[in-house]
Length: 173
Image (tube, rainbow, N blue to C red; front, side, top):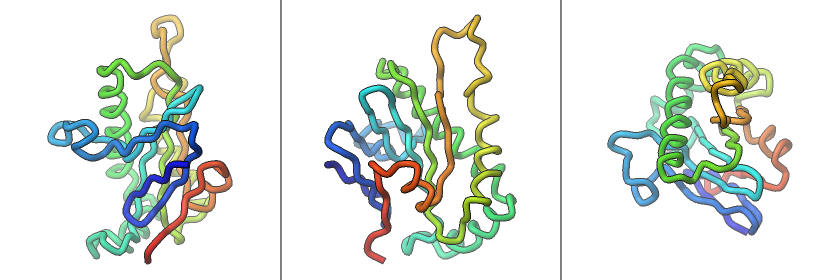
């Protein structure tokens, strides 16, 4: 079993998953010019790019705690946040592609760790992210490979329901 920690969140993965914290300089060394997803998880048949946003984290600057949740709920934060999420995926994909590690379908999972966000708040967020990623829009006649297979936005409850084998929990609050 492998446990990944981001802030005060832990995700547990089974032994058959190859997991890596990716958004630090030790992993890729290009934070000066590229954005990175938090974790890359390689499974037997696919790869997960996982990005975590925790606006309620105790060490988050106070201006970033409650205000973004309200903006997120209303959709006011969508353009700014969606741009950041898309760039994190693209730069991580480009890095992995340049390292010749892209040989399986990639799923991009975004965890918004907030008790204030309901399932109803998450639907519009995924609708905002998906059109800006090359999901089903690629041309099978031109492209020989898919860039991103699936994408989803979750809160802790929906994550644990969708990924029961990879549970997430808050720690140390």
